[in-house]
Image (cartoon, rainbow, N blue to C red; front, side, top):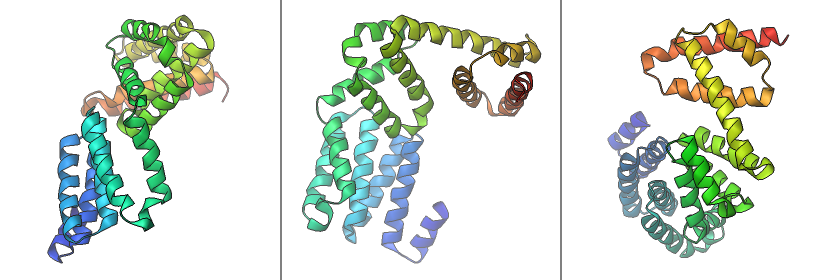
Length: 263
């Protein structure tokens, strides 16, 4: 995109510049670089208004709305949604477009009482420990152990792709808590954390990989899938110079587990 932007600036092609800046804003937002994303969107929006190009303006306004919402500024986000709809509704060709209708549903959720539910889910996800997580869920179970909360959590996953693994883990807990109770859901979490600790000890060389593989071989596939995702997330959080060696250990665990299970 940077190369394309330089090319459009050299030609010059203002619409090409605007569309590229908007795309760069999308990339920054997905990486949670919200300040950089806002700058890209605003620069693109200014160009799109000069041209003028309605489609690019709509894309920029939507990006700005989602960017503000991702930072927790619901008031600013809803103001941007209103700008988006004012522009879309001024042109019949856009007003009833399927994408516009989808955005209307998104904005209705985020700018209404349902947003309060999303805020409680975010507070739950951001609790510092699993004990605090359980306490928060117990205190708010009437609101969070519901179909509406599951739908809201899935919407958060779409809005925050950079936190999809963390949100997916909480979605699993939510669903298990609804099926089996909060105590059972967190007992499973404690079991998974204990297994993670053993595997991390293997990574650090204080426990043999073969010993851990023997434990993993007896683990049900569903539990292993969850554990594998968490290990990949933990590895991605380590210093870059250590990640390759840790991935090799994880790959060896996968190989040993398959071997011991006859797969």
